[in-house]
Amino acid sequence: MRRQKVKLYVLLALVLMLLGIAAFAPHLVPCDPYEQNLSQALQAPGRGHLLGTDRYGRDMLSRVIMGSQTTIFSALLLVAVITVTGTSVGLFCGWRGGKLDSFIMRISDIFLAFPGMVFAIAVAGVLGGGILNAVIALACISWPKFARLARSQVLMIKDAPFVAAARLSGSGGTKIVFSHILPNILGPVLVTATLDIGTMMMEIAGLSFLGLGAMPPIAEWGSMMSSGRSMLQTSPWVILAPGCAIFVTVMLFNLLGDTVRDVMDPRQSVQHVDRR
Image (cartoon, rainbow, N blue to C red):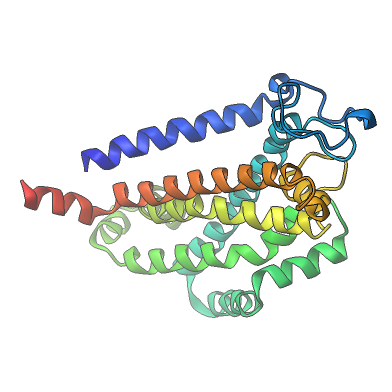
């Protein structure tokens, strides 16, 4: 258990460092990420440009750093929206039950029946390009997972003794939900949300790669890969730089989610006690 906590602290430090880079990206870039200089187009990585330049002579390192702000914060916004929306819906349905619960769950079944990315592409195509429209498109298809998770957790504990005791003490339904039910279901929801950050980041980058997310010249990792895909053989750094940034960031968030799940899993504590 102690090793898991140490691993958690290390990953948290790395993720916070990554978030710090994204937050202060405009102050950390060595060059203007949008300044074009055709005389330096497609320069290989070197002393002047550590990650080379793109077809317009823009510094790739500066664009990767600036792109972290768009990509990471868009993914965090998306995860926050679907977590709050899905959890609120699941909490309401699990607590109230009845025909409204069945109706909302059937709606969630309809959303889950479609392949997520295909549905998001359709919604983003209707809404048009733009990073905000990409977030809305993915939010439309991603909330049912959190709704079903929250609902299942509520159904497990709504008849627990401590909830019955709260009813006997005179607490109203709203107070029971927010004081007793919600705190006890937050653990699984937060773990799922942490694990979902990497997935949502990949899907936002995928929509941008298809031209349905961030629009040029905005620095965003998916759109940067899309604009450089034709130069993979001649100037591979143009697509490898944002690709490696996506890989490292998604890996860090996935490792953090796995570690948070292991630390919060009660079985880990039981195994630790048994070994002692």
